[in-house]
Image (cartoon, rainbow, N blue to C red; front, top):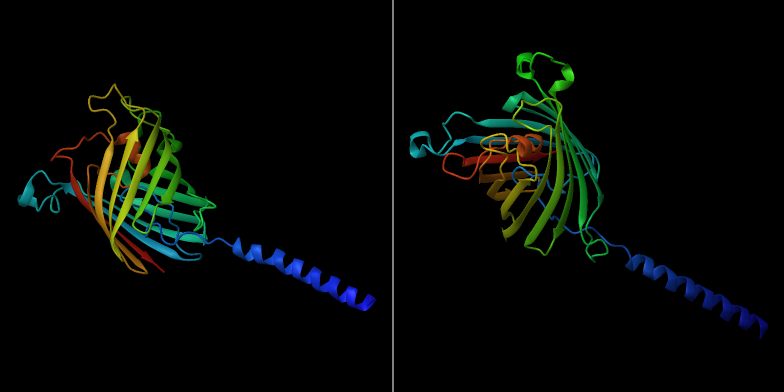
Length: 283
């Protein structure tokens, strides 16, 4: 009888232990699948980071203004195009570093993206949170920085917090708050500006989406006749396992966020609209 009681107690303990193990497996919650296919929508950053230990080559191109129509193929042959080529490396699944070079003001830029929180399937984490930082070094002539030139005058900085959510299999959205600082500016510009950004995508086929984005500088520079203006973009994106192609129209020539919020002074008109594309390749 005593042996039977001991056996029953051991069995009961084993069942209790097994019951405690099962919830642990149920609590395993994976991140949502593919809320974004690339690290940018058009100009804005997303929460996307390629898989660990992968390289990402990026080419950003903005043609000239479409104002002359067919005479210069809606800006394709027009002057004023801007180009950036960058290379990123994913150190961890949620951490990325990168370097890029641009013909716009000859920016050489370094970037860092860190995603501490990722949206999960069961909504135990309902949104993704990402921090993005970008440092620019302007490689133009010393004369561009005035008489009291110092090398640090070339530096500019951009920091951003991005909150994103995949609403369903068709729609993803993101909102951001950001801060831009330039060590050296001309009199008509401020050293600092705060901005708000938003964007999203809507899937129209298994591999293609419609994208949109916008940004608003909260500090308007009233001493300049044009002032800092909002920027907008509308695009079409096609992706494969290793490539993403983005085609769009936008009202800005900027290819870097640190230039976008402080120096953008163009409204929305035929003279300011540009066609552009981004190409991403992952190894």
